[in-house]
Image (tube, rainbow, N blue to C red):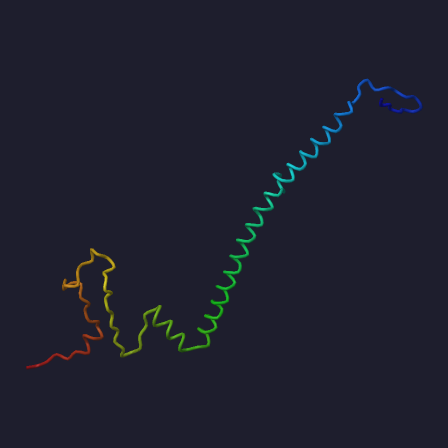
Length: 140
């Protein structure tokens, strides 16, 4: 029996907790807490997902660090290596030195099949203005 002591008098409670119920209550409380630890907001599944995200972010961070280092090296070469600067200017900006002639060859397969065939006279490349001025008209 349960007694509550108030002052000096003892009172009897009207209800009693059965003995087996405390065991069921504790077992259900432990079960509920373990389910919350596995599935809850900060549970095992959430931790597992966060570890996967961290692995992806670490991989992306490593890749970006490598890319940054390559870009730093390229900037350094552009600032200090004149031959590299000239090579980049020729390749990416299509710059030429005075007096140079650029020859462009078409690829073996046309890029756009509707663009016309190689036998079509309109598809042939025309000489540049520099090549036209170099020609001297022949007088007969």
